[in-house]
Length: 280
Figure 1 (cartoon, rainbow, N blue to C red):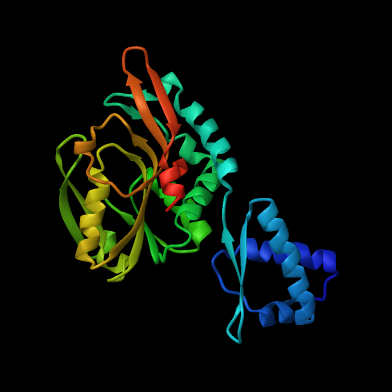
Figure 2: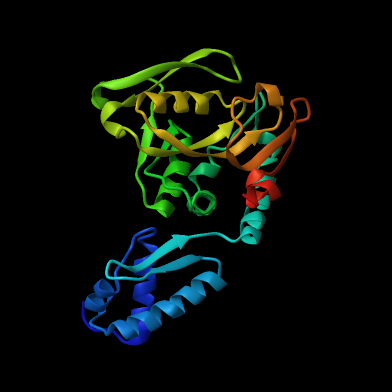
């Protein structure tokens, strides 16, 4: 790369960091890339760090030593996240979204790039301090949420299928009981999709009793993998506590009431914003 003016270098460095979250980049790499002294690079990084933190973009961590460098961690400030989720909750309360069985239609929302980017940053903020190797979701609506989160954490995604595909090769399949319908269903994961003993973050779009997520957790047991966390976009508050199959999870929104006759719903921000979770 040709030598840039400082203003241009700052812009390019910012873009470089934003496109490589959770990646350690050495000062030497930056110095070589911009044909600049390490002292100048350090000054630039100090400016970027200040702006990132003041604007709630994320954190820029500096690691000292010969193998050190800088690493950008995307974060979203609590106040900004709450404003965004409050607006999303209002959208989820639209009467035409109510589906039989107390579910909500959210497919259209999961096709909005800006919304997905925001949700991905929220999940990335919630699980930033955990060691995670891969994100798992089950087809189909959880896929965009998983990839949005993966983009912020810079880790791969594996997709659990409802049935085994011949193009996936050999796979592990399990039967599980749906927490909401109490029906026995099947899910499978290709053996090549996940390394044994991986640390996995599960992301799902909607959780009622938690049967699907519990099924994914049982599937991970077959791979000797560890569940590093569970994140859900919307959880149902209509399920009794004793019916809930899951206790440790992060939800962004909570469906607290559904009137099937009037199509009126109440959706509030989830436990992501609870004092108990924030104090962990």
